[in-house]
Amino acid sequence: MTLAFLSLLAAINAVLFNVTFPNISRDLHLASSQVSWIAIGYSMVIAIGSIIYGKLADAISLHKLFLIGIGLFILGSLLGFSKHDSLGIIILARMLQASGGSAFITLAMVAVRLMIEPQRRPLALSFISVGIALAIGLGPLISGALISRFSWPIFAG
Image (cartoon, rainbow, N blue to C red; front, side, top):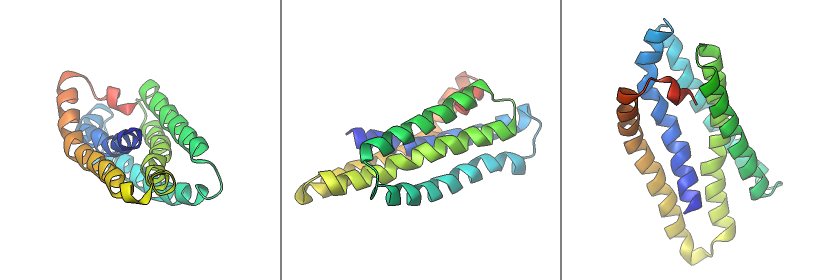
């Protein structure tokens, strides 16, 4: 369940922020093409990070890699939350989050392969898949509800 939760967290974080782009564009006086770099940077780092964490899992313990991922995710969140008036800082913060978040899904699947007996793997992988699917569907709904109540900088972290 912890692996499914981390996968959900990584996936929901990928889509949660996107609802705020019009508000960021308006508040920071930016073109939508500039704001789109937030999503582009996040997606690129997720893709590259997934490959890197998968390869590192052959040489470094999953425990250490998960801690590194969680640390990077938290560092990006704190940076984004504390300094959200600059597009460059927001992009950097999101890329730090992505460098941590990319560990969650990749390492969850590696952990299932290494730690779960073969007959129980399909169930474990389905929990991870359900977490990802729920996150992608619920992320914009949750984000929309929160953005209507609070201002977008709460999403920067």
